[in-house]
Length: 487
Image 1 (cartoon, rainbow, N blue to C red):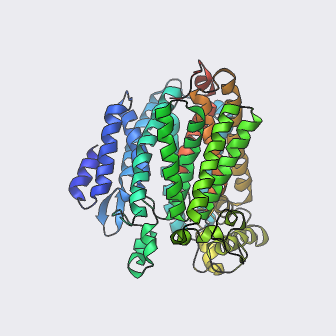
Image 2 (tube, one colour):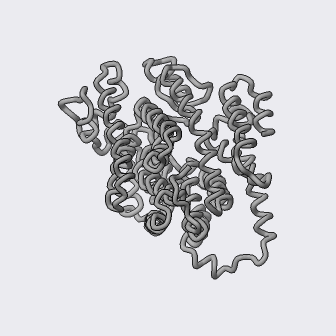
Image 3 (cartoon, rainbow, N blue to C red):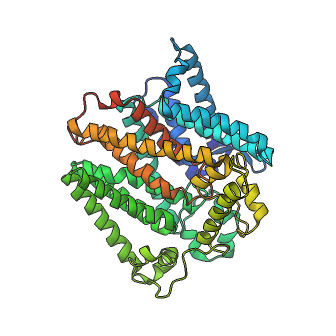
């Protein structure tokens, strides 16, 4: 709370940012169940992770220290002290027997070693710090969610932080901008035009693609809640959240995120059909129908065509738009300009560089950008724009395949936990949490292609931490299951 009050005094011009932090901070203190100050600090870390770069301590020029990083450092020290005091300490053999812990250890060691062959070691070391911060964040999520009760409180905090974000996004859709830097303000586009750029919401996220990924993750938790909950008041609230998130997503013009959102809805519908959970299936279908109706209806409004431009260039999504184009250009061509073509060119370049040009070990942490800059055929875009190919480019074939295996293992283990949970508590919290994470992690396979880089995208690491704690502590999450709808 000290950081929030300090920022109110230091940066009074950021009144909306400070008000958001203050209100949610007070809610955390008085409405979230916490037992120790370290636990309270963890919930504030969750709050700061949403605000990220918009909530910082100015030091020199544009060099700022994020309050997220300060709070996380204190929390990490607290966790380290608590771990050292544990008796007995975990044995190395027990640690090595856990495939997720083993992967994390191997990944960290390999990442450090990759600095030795990185062309630009300065950039590599800088990115090592980013990885260290996000790994500590993931470990905090894992540590403070050892059972259902704690995980419920985490989801409550995420709910309280999300609702105001959607409201702020609605204001930005009306060209009432937040006093927060983003890709358009940094490029001077609000002055140069066109005017509709002022109506593309970004809120606390630097660009609309990042915001779009966040919105898809939100809807991955909202849709199952609607499918699970039978309390009219709560279900009504989540319907409002779902529609608000959808409208924010359309105005964000994030094509990848919207397509993934559709696929996530379809995937959850098919999942409930396979598991023969017909009540959940019908509710999921209802969400899908409302989603299509809203998208289709808005696409018929001429003034909305500027937000459907990218959608209309995509054949599958184009079929849902009344104002669709008759003649369409190819989605992507190697070496051409345009976001899709540039991403395709980046993928081809990285594959060629790693496999054909003899860099199977990768270019070294954060050095894929150096290679892309040297190739020079991506029109100035040098960020990998994909989690998967960032891993391939930085760490090579071995870690790339290992990472895919671990990611798929997470999904498979979550499915197994879900199938166990519905045997005794079909509408219990554990089954709700696992199906939401299956949807979010499954969708992230594709939304990971939207942002320029997702390594500092805290919501991704949040999902990893939650998934790991449910899988590793599955007995605690499955014992004494609730048989009533999730509350």
